[in-house]
Image 1 (cartoon, rainbow, N blue to C red):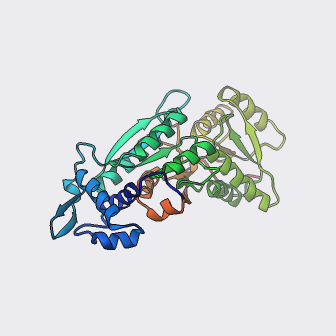
Image 2 (cartoon, one colour; image 1 turned 60 degrees about the vertical axis):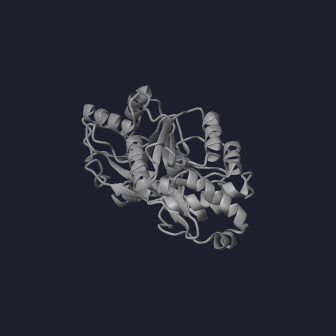
Image 3 (cartoon, rainbow, N blue to C red; image 1 turned 90 degrees about the vertical axis):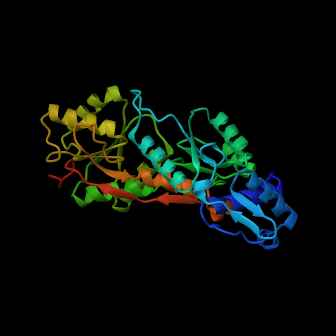
Length: 352
């Protein structure tokens, strides 16, 4: 992909990546050797090394060569070498901070510190401004790169980011145009895993309850559930309800001559509501009704709920590492993180 960056800036970014991640820990290859490897000329490499020296990432010694500065000596405190983490404001409809955001932030920061890099954290739901700032930062030699988490990028945004030429990773958002590296959980696999668990327990009447607010992740999970049941010759029943409508929808479904034996919900908040509604209606969970959600429930709910768990710590760590992956930068690809079943006492063998 053609970049509108000067050649020396492109070379500087490659060398900086290798130094920060520890590929170069002592004397760097000579300028002529680097020029041959990177397809440029020694003068361009020399200019790139001057920039790296100004950042404190290398020291150049006459007649001896160029040496990588140990990570502990990098000027991290002054922010000269930093990675950006930008999150869409992670709050629920009730204004509470969602638990996974702090986990991603912690893991990203820990991965950055391990490589002697600072982290700049931002929250924004203004996608156009986020993209504009990411492009501007891509032209800043001190910026390792930008990771965008749950930022709803459209095709036009991705094209602009790809053309900017700097390391940008999109995480936890499905891209329609994969022109930059992107990282998501295996949400289709998560949906299939949920159905595999419930059908393995003998459940045949399964309802997926979701709110009107959807996301690419939720759509993928729903697709995974439907495709798994399709393979068994069954159909996934999907119900959409706002939070205020959930009690009425639940009552209507459970009043059927053959009510559902299992619910999967799009959020743990919905699952928590169903726990209370079932208790008020003298419906035993999981004896009469099994409940699952995405992901596994955090500890502040009434009870822990069976779910397909997303490892957000792994996402934060992997997102940082992808900023230094030269192969991914050259050939943008979709990286999938595996999911696991977190089985609690809200699912059990169906009573048919």
